[in-house]
Length: 289
Ligand code: NAD
Image 1 (tube, rainbow, N blue to C red):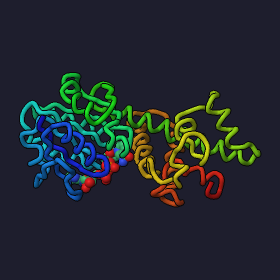
Image 2: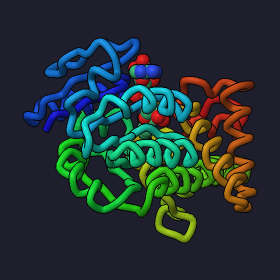
Image 3: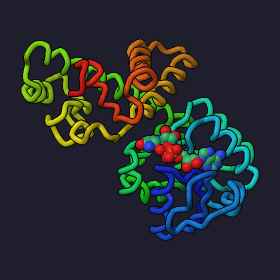
């Protein structure tokens, strides 16, 4: 396929490189980053979109997505599909999809989980909103860039799934960290705490797969000085999006609200910026664990 790829940062560059390596013809554009291997450089987003069967965007936020969409939609040939893989607010995802459809194009919101490692290895999970026919057309590309793609529903459903998942992740990580801090105070050995909780009803991905306590459980960023992994500021971004969605949809999310506040304190007023989101443990134990 002919693919236009806009946004060649930490995630976009390896995703575009994997598509090129699989034999697709990829033309890329980024305002800052250099073109990855196998990707032809375009002078503008519109130029990258011209003649494309599918245009993929991987951008920082909804505002930038809206401005890039305004440039690429008029340039795309009729029947092509605009597939946004960024994590953005549900309202921007729906607005861009509507604009694309009005111009005779297909549109998908397809945010990912799996991080930079997953982007490089081609093992991302895609959660996708849009109509089934568009999903089917882009599915072969999801197969190259990832290991799983779930069609979640209409436009916005992919972003909805992503922020609901990450709201649970933020809340359970904080709960796991505060429980470890309480266990410390009670003189309970961290390994024993892990052995019990990871096989009891308190288990979660945060405890079992990504344990915030160093030296306990499988290897995680805690064992690597809390180098991300998934940086605290990206968790804050996603918790801001889930709270924005909750207030626009009228949903009550008190735990999500508190998690958002704690990650904002951690990133903006404490020492969380640039550290993995599991470094939240140090906040509760009062010193570096
Ligand atoms: P990044 O900042 O490394 O990449 C974004 C790229 O977009 C940059 O290279 C930037 O120059 C480019 N860009 C900005 N404005 C542009 C414009 N107008 N036209 C063209 N290019 C433009 O960010 P990233 O880590 O690659 O993340 C991209 C998206 O993926 C974000 O929405 C993020 O939330 C999401 N995401 C990231 C991760 C992760 O672990 N990094 C995991 C899941 C989802």
